[in-house]
Each structure stands twice: as structure tokens, then as C-alpha cells.
Image 1 (cartoon, helix red, strand yellow):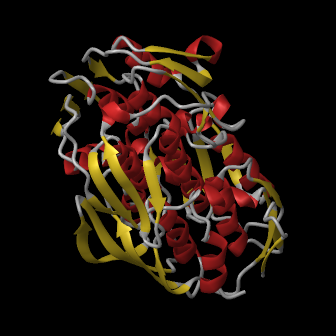
Image 2 (image 1 turned 60 degrees about the vertical axis):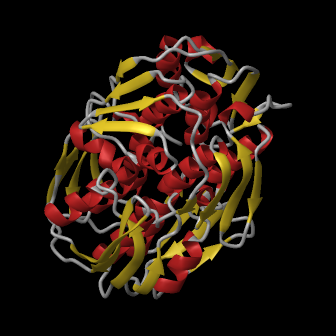
Length: 443
């Protein structure tokens, strides 16, 4: 049984009788939806973005650009960015821009606004106000940006007095697609200047792919990504692929629940996003097949056939692999409780500053469900021993969509009843999550 209260502040889930059976189309990709509307809003002409994710985080980006004078219309199939006159025509906002819960909105928008000749301020909800921004502000200041933030530039709100920027070559201390994207978007404004980012390991490359699709002069050479500034981006028709990180919740449900046979259609399989598959297929032995491989624009997609897999093997993950599976950390923790042996995740300190402290949230919740979990003394990860029979309990999601959804999957295999508090957090990325779960799983 899956039962929510009226405003979905909590949801009650009882152990399911069998795993998900049938088909589901992956919801639109959140990361790509953000980037599509940002780049369309600074391009010349009209852009049509189909299969846009109309969830909390991407809509924060839409509303931010509306406040900057961009005409964006919602359609049945997505959104249209109408007659956007390019980067140079963004207008000074009349009010402080509210980024909601979206770190992507705030960090990428900071890069866009750093060069605009007006004053702007960015804020967000209580969670976002405690997420680190110095990692973005520091490289932008090296580009001569005039930016300040609370607590010595560490936290929002962010204040920006836009000015002419200078190109840099920046060696990133930590791989971050959001920081990389912010620098590239700032570099786009420097006519003829070449701005380069050097990553320690490869992070998501959706921004590079999307900029190229709109006509940017961008160069990718291994871990080096550079852009030559230009105002000549051209509006495009964009089809957003399915979100792999959202599909991962149903992948997990299928491989740990007896009787499961699930086809997840039209899912993005960008190589920088599917480290989760490398772990669960290559190391854990999950029964997953990729079918109907094709592409949407510059992004590869496939259908994923997922079946229950007994005797899952343990895994070991180090810091170099974290960027390609950063959203799937909670799910890997859950899967480790069902694997036969000891699994270890290291180098995941970045997860302490997401929508919640995801390491602490997973340790706390899994322990309450009866799992054997050790949090590393240096704070960079966990060691989990399995398999264990989970038990229902009360789970705090800390208003984190991925924590709420992960423990909802855990509840399906846990004895008794599990209550997920602040389950409405799923609206940020997957508003239809509980409807789809209830449709596919037999209680």
C-alpha cells in the first residue's frame, strides 16, 4: 500500500508483494532542461524545447530568465523561448531573483550575469542558502567579476554588479559540472577571448554539448574544455531526453524486488552520467540490458530492460568515479544493504553539501531500518555490509528529493510500514514519482 496525506508532507508505504512490471518512460532530464532554457535565453531567435521537465528546479530557471526580460511560454509539449534577442538584451531584474531549491539555477545564472552591465541579486530557500557558492565565485573573480556573497563569499544570497570580464585558464580543484558550466557561460560573453577549464576527472558534459548545438565555438580535449567568446548563438529546436538519474530509482526497485520485469524507455545514457550502470552491471551483476540505442540531438538514449537479480555482489567506489554517479549515491547505499558482502564508497564528501547532507541522511535512515552502516571517520563515505532484511520505520527526507525517493524504494522491500516525511520534496525533479510507483508495483 502507498498512501499519501493531502499535501504529501508524508507518505506511508507498506512492503510490496512483487517488483515493478511493465513499461515506463523516463521523465525529462533535469540537468538538460536547465541548460536548454539558459542557453536558449541568451541565443538569438526562437527556441522550442520539447519534453522540458516542468518540475520545481527547472521552473526556477524559467522564472529567473523571465525576470530578466526573456519571453518564455509553456506549451503542451514543453516551452518556447520567444524572440530572445541574445545575451546583450537581458534586462536588469526589478526584484531579487529567487532560485528556490535549485543550486544549478544559482550557479549557472551567476556565470551568465557576471558580465551583464547591471546589478542583480540571487537568493533561494533555506536549503540553498546553506550550499557552497565560493567554488563558483572564486574563478569568476579571477575573470574580474564583481560578486559578493554571505560569510566571505561562501553562501547565498549572491550580489552581482556585472562588468566586462577577462578570459582565464582555470584548473578545477574538484570536478563539478555546475562550476565548469558557470565559467563557460561567463566566458561566452568575452568576444574573441578564450576561456578554458581543466577538470581533475570528467564531469557531466551536457553544457558543452548544448552550447555546441546552439553554435558556440567550444573545444573539448580530454579533461580540457575551452570556449571562444561570441554573441552569435542561434535559437534551436531541442528535444530533452529521459533523465537517467530519475530512471535509476526504478532500476533499483527492479533489481532488488522479486518478480520484477521493467522496461524503462527513452533514457539518456550520456557516458558522463551512467557510472551507476557500470557499478550495478559490471560489479554487482545486475540483470540489465540496453535496447534500441539511438540519440536525441547530441545526447545518446536507450531503453533499459531491468529484471530482479538475486545474489548481488558488493562493490568498491573511489573518488575518481563519484562525478559520474553523484546523484545515485543514496541508491548505491541502499543496494549495498542487499549485496552479499561489504561495499565501500569513498571520496563522496561533496554529497554533504547537496540538498541535504546525503551521507548523514543515508547513514541515519539505513541504520533505523536495521542496516549495518559505518560512516568513515574522515567523513568522505561509508562502508555497508549486506545482505540485511530491512524493517519499516519513520524516515526523515530532510526535504531532499533523492533521499525521499530512495527510502521509498527501500520501503518496498522492508518489513512492515515505512513513513517518509516531507515526501513532497519529489516535486523538485520527479512530480509523477509516486503515481508511477503505485502503477508498476503490486502491493
